[in-house]
Amino acid sequence: MMEAVRSHRFTRDLVEFNKKLQQGLENLKELSEEDIAFGTSPKEEVAREENIVLYRYTPVVKKPNPVPVLISYALVNRPYMVDLQPDRSLVKRLLELGLDVYLIDWGFPRRVDRYRTLDDYINHYIDTFVDVLRERHDVPAVNLLGICQGGAFSLCYTALHPEKIRNLITMVTPVDFHVEDGLLNVWAGCNGASTQMDVDLMVDTMGNIDGNFMNFGFLMLRPFSLGMGKYLDLVDTMSDRRRLENFLRMESWIFDSPDQAGEAYRQFMKDFYQQNKLIKGEVEIGGRQVDLGKISTPVLNIFAEEDHLVPPSSSRALGEYLGTDDFTERSFPVGHIGMYVSGKVQRELGPTIAEWLSARTPGA
Image 1 (cartoon, rainbow, N blue to C red):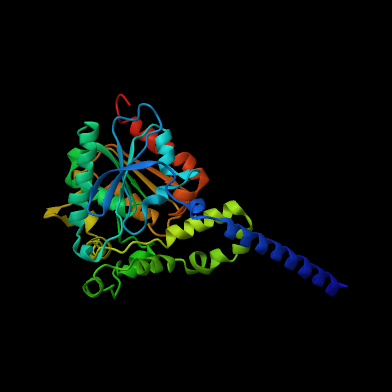
Image 2 (cartoon, rainbow, N blue to C red):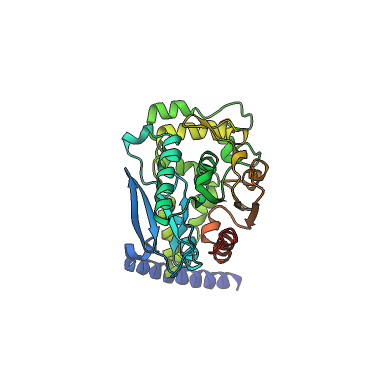
């Protein structure tokens, strides 16, 4: 009797599996590139430096906040994560809340770009685009939103050019690179590790650091959940058109990894990860030392409580080193990627930023 019951269940499950698989294959067949496209908010190129582009997103209110927001994303992934799709778009939400939003697209470094330095990224590209916004909007200073590595760049920029930044927002930004709960830090050779990643050998041998190498390292931080685990329910995902689109969109972003300009990678890994110079006031950019204590502008620090790439303790350290009296900290109960894809976070993150900025922009 029990054998017959098990046989019936197996047959039923197999039929159901085949139905889902067939539906999934039909969904895959019908999908086009437009269905999983990124960057749904209209934008225009307003400036370009070599292969690095400054975009302005089309405002959706008649009178945006008079002080524009410049987004500086990380170099290691493509920035369209902040505008992934209409219902998961930080950019779209900020536009709806009356902000004037710009974004730096770092592009894909070429072989000739292996000699780009942090000085190039911070004192040339960011500074050039900040000046473009100041002139376009006739304001002495702009708002800067730095995300992940782009947040570390934004801290350096603000410390070196405090007169050009009205308000600073850092999001999932590493600050203390020697916290004990950061596996990525340990791999880089931090926290007193007996062996260190030989960054000099890597850069001298490879020039630019292959984006696939970087991506593989991130996946190995959680090999099961970020590797095989997410594919176990693939048939169920494929059978649902909307879930399939979301899955493919995320997969495309994850594996769209630019190479890293060699010299910038060298300095970032050695000065920030291995020697933790940012909080020591020892990072040198363009011949000048970066002192976080010189940041007196208002700062909003946003971090993810379950972040495995940038541990909360690394981000929360920021408040200990700034010179500002106006420091606000806000966290969300998600991981690193959850800051962009969580529906609840997307409902709250935009208003958090917009309200904080509006309170610090008289006449907005």
